[in-house]
Amino acid sequence: MDKKQAAEIDWRIEDRNLYIGIRGKLDTLVAMSIDDRLGELPDGVTSIFFDFDGLEYIASAGLRILYWAQEYAEEKGGRMKVSNISPEVLEILETTGFKDLIEIE
Image 1 (tube, rainbow, N blue to C red):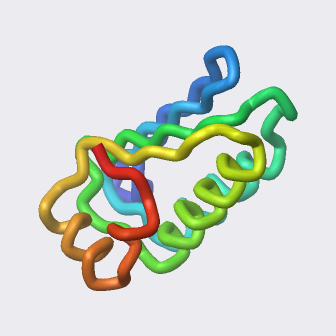
Image 2: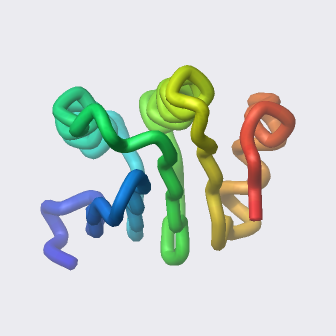
């Protein structure tokens, strides 16, 4: 990962599912980039799965992405799930109350 880059993002769509893997830091700039791409999702996508393996930090803008993804999946009749959460990121989700709002594997 380049020092100027806050995160590495893997993005793939399979059938009706979007898989997003994020490593590094999910700061405001990275969240804005993800938000731009989410705005261009094909209509057929109903579920969003985040893999946070290697994610060290999530900013409030990243939490907004999770909130949006949760709302989107519910509206489409799908689901949103987050997996491989580090203790540091889990602490942020617990502190902000997001742990109770989203599905965590």
